[in-house]
Length: 416
Image (tube, rainbow, N blue to C red; front, side, top):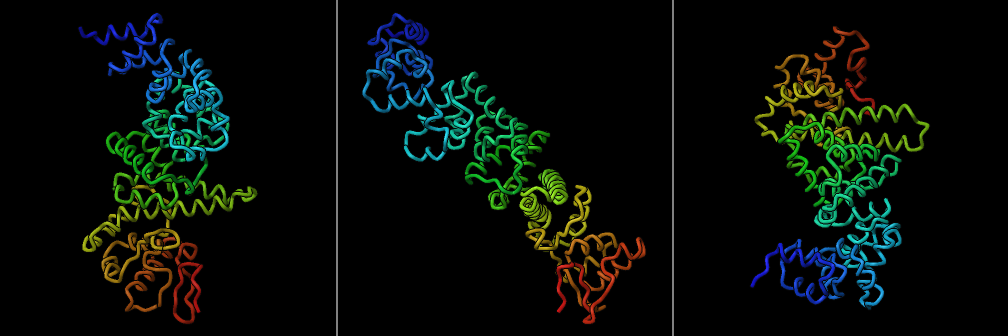
């Protein structure tokens, strides 16, 4: 006669059930609830606890019978798991790179995270390398999940960067932290254009968060994407270039505005030792972010569509309220938006405001030989006169022409 899972569960949880009966239930039952109950029963044999430890770590470690198993069993794996549970910081409190020393580190890491003695440093080191699937299994316990959340929050609240980018991404993917917490922790890290992680983790996180943003257009997902863009190294953007589209422009523009403010702040506070480095990081971030704008609005256009793109790029930049930027300078943006002579012929037919935008953005170049037959030189002279008529000498692009009839719009241009 077959016994139902409900009856088996009652037997498995009974403290009077002997070890032989528990072993039989463990071997014959495939119910997760029943097997967890067997693993948690103090009468479970060493054989059952050894088998259960890899699947139901929490139930085994909190089983009073496990302590007896540690004392009288010679299995080194059992002893090691017990020691880690008792003192996680001894094994994971110094470095996360211990993870690469053994193939069984996933089980050891789970034992450490389950332990109520797990400290903040051990938790951060473990999250950074443990698979998301293992993290999700562990945080099914609300008690453990809340303890890990509190450890992460306490670290960041005390200005201790608990997690690197990979750790934050895994924490978000496993739902240890929320989307807005992901944004807040990236912001608190204070990193600009200097964070990275493994390509697979970065892509998985971006695609999942991107779906949340495109479908919901929530302020939380926008904020998280913005701070990911700000914090990421330039190499990370190569992995997501095919995922970017016009819907991302508001996020990119918000990131650019914030980085511009940060650059201004660090320039005005040179007393900090790291100010010069931070300014450099901000400039690199601006270059990458501006490149994303050019990528979305210009690079992917068919060449024959770029005539219409001249007005559209101008209108979109104004719509996003982006600060003046040298879109055509390869020092400031890559890929740079440079206009060929053919496109300049079309630009010459457009309103003077559009011409002024592209000239000021260095999209026609940084220097020109004065010649009315040269279309770029003609547009530059026309824009310069228009600016003079509107605001006088203080408003013009240039005030002098070299003896060799060369106009320089950029101070870095050296005329031989």
